[in-house]
Image: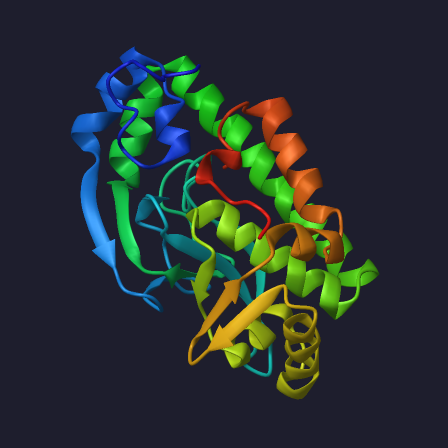
Length: 251
């Protein structure tokens, strides 16, 4: 499964990097380069999903469940370790949740009809995407448990850790209001948590951005949920989940 040193290590998406060389040969001509700004919607609940998207580099996508009052609560954050949209399902099925670009940048995307054609040509390609779907489901399961069991401080620290692991950066373009909405908490409550994290000198904030100044300090305040998801990725798809290669270190 490991495709390092096989000619497509440069593409910026770890799931695609994990393809066998013959599977990459099938899929590569069907992929198109695509870019999008932060906040770009990929699909809304009920839309027929047309494409699968593979974030590259520091790009991020959020899955969001839209509540009756209009709030959109994040259930999964996908970066260079994965993909969004129709990876396992057959054809263009209606979306249950909203998918939105959380951090703009570069992506690969593929029309789902072409993806089905590729999967019909390769059993190993189907198996790889099925294993990824298991990992994504594990992330959603862990998110449900985390929301029920852990404090807002722990969940905030966990989200920031997940974001910087996926992007390889120590700063995220995100307002406190946006983060509060995704976590499903009030803006004033999150502001108190952010202030506490600042006072502990683990994060820094400036207009529209949150930076991590002490990764190990933030990790000590987070719940175990991100580590649990990372371990499952390593068990099922070793080498796909972003690791210490991103250069993150305590300061």
